Length: 153
Image: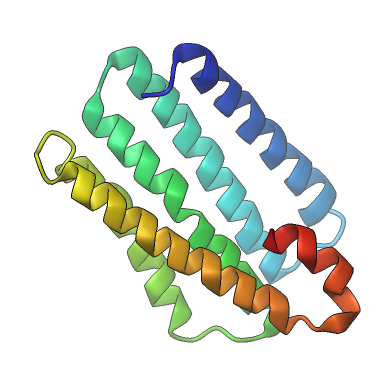
């Protein structure tokens, strides 16, 4: 559980990051990839609000659902890179499945003994999407290497 002060900071930072990206990234140069990334930021922001509310209500189920939603947004970051490259297709089904499945599984198992195993599985899947994101960043080529390295790290 995140302490109340950190939960408030998470809400503030996710809101600020969302507003900055939409204002500086999406609105000046709208594209399908920027729209997907904006959706990822909005999802992370929304899940941080749900997490803060769940902490106030002391609800393990809502906290688990918010955690799953927040962690699953990395799939949209990867999808945005795929859209930018022009490759889509079957990837949408995988991303939507993870975004819907992760919070659902964690919420259903929140008050059971299997919860920690489910959290580990969701984090492993999120790590796989992180690895796919790094692979997509490396596909951008040597011209953008200076911009890619901080994102990959």
